[in-house]
Length: 117
Image (cartoon, rainbow, N blue to C red; front, side):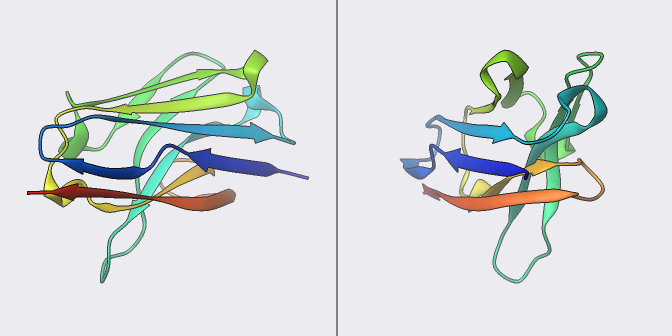
């Protein structure tokens, strides 16, 4: 059974930082790209950052490039998303995902990130 447990969301001011964590288990890390989706009210869910444990490659959606950094450690069953220089438009529910960025095979519960202006 795939289990995804995300944490680390919260309320920050513009320019602040947050670090999301996701403990992920029940799947082969070398067979999937894992990462983070986010969803804002009125918009669809979108993959924003992904990582392949197999070859270490990463993906960042244009709006987060240079500000967000994804990392993972399969030995710890954990993927992180370091988010710096946060902006109000980053406000969303963030989801940990197995399968990324175009679609999600498994999606965890979300964690709310709110950036105040």
